[in-house]
Amino acid sequence: METMTNPFPVDSPASSAPAEDPVRCDAEAGKAGTLLFVDDESNILVSLIRLFRPLGYRLFTATSGREGLAVLEREAVDVVVSDMRMPEMTGAELFEQTAKRWPGVMNILLTGCTDLNLTIAAINKGHIYKYVGKPWEDAELRMTVQRALERKRLEEERADLVRTIQRQNAELLDLNANLEAKVEARVAEIEQVMAMVEKAHDELRSNFVDILGVLSSIIEAREGGVAGHSRRIAHLAHLLALELGLSEPQAEAVRVASLLHDIGKVGLPDPLIGRPFAALTREERDTVMQHPVIGEAMLMSLHSMHDVGTLIRSHHEHYDGSGFPDGLRGGAIPIGARILAVVSDYDLLRSGRLLIDRLDDKQAQHYLTGRRGTHYDPTVVDAFCHLLKSLPEGYDLDEAPVTPEQLQAGMRLSRDMLTRTGMVLLHKGKVIDEALAAKIRSLARNADTGIKIWVVRTPSSPDTPPQSSA
Image (cartoon, rainbow, N blue to C red; front, side, top):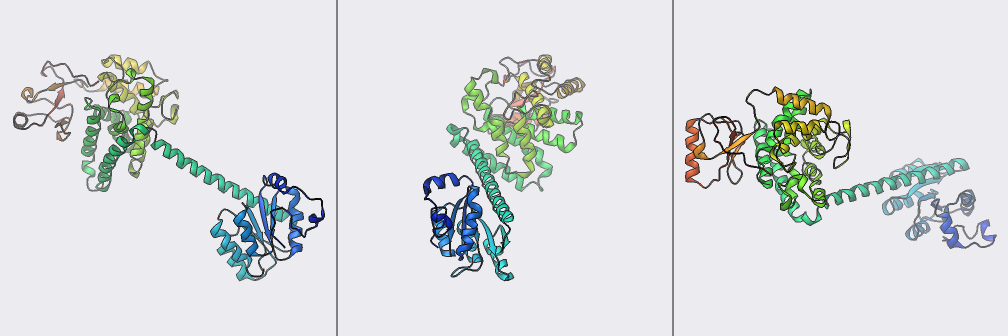
């Protein structure tokens, strides 16, 4: 029997019927699926054509494995139904070729063969979907073909979904196409630092806090004039997380996320760095609003930082669902991100980087409470305001810059003491004694280190107004 592009074999009873337009027939039948029947007995092929012809399938026949392969080479076939014992090539050998060359095709073995070894070979080498014995039950064979087509379509949909996800991930990486070169270079630097931290994690666990502090300083150095923001909110966010009943590991994740929450800003254009969000144009805001997604992506390769990355991604979500980047609402926002949002905005309000004007403590708290239930989780806002009231007397987020000559014994650093290049000399919280003050003054005189010194404001601090970090 000759293989046909017409859905009916030439020697079937259908060949005596009035001729049909094969193009029209194929176009209509192809909607249900395309089947190829392979058997060296023409009466079997005729029976199969009669069985499946009314169901709307596009049908092809072949009398040998060689002819079947020829059909597969020129036609898009969904299901192959083949006999086992045939001249030149067995059904098992045909399915082996089909599995290698057209892995998406579903193979059904239709055989009266009782040779167990041949059947096993067809299953192992040809990856057959199912085998049906001769003589077959019409309803069973129809159902088997239908289910094979359904499985093929499900697998194709799954493959399409995987391709869609891969495409969307690629688009995510290209969101800031005009900054691609700059982002790639800076992301590579951050990834290198993070890879070093991950490799030395076990040995340097006791120094993990210091390492994160240095990385936070690098991020803030990119923004310019905002030194201490991440460390301030990390301290308060950790306290607030414990106040709200989070476990120590959860509170630690909030603290680490606070230190790195602006890591995605390394790829922003220079003109957008350090400007209050309220002063940006709509286009500039759209660009800035991508930084939480970029920040999460930077930490994606570090398994131990996945939870931190999630908090970074969600720290600009609003309680009423109006935030970004995912429009999460209420409890769908991770509790750590809700904490970070409140504490970070409080510090930005105090420094004049959220609004154009700087707010004092009471004004900043009023701003937060006025947005309970819209921007912020009411429970988190209430707990934060209570925390601020419960801090020890004399605790003040305000600070004062001093020169090395103004440094006095008893002063306490409110930020890490850094060189111009970002190297940490002394950590936040260090109380200065006279000997240490003398060493700092000597270092400043004898080396161009560009030391910046910020101390907790007290009545004894020099009467110097705090420098704006806007």
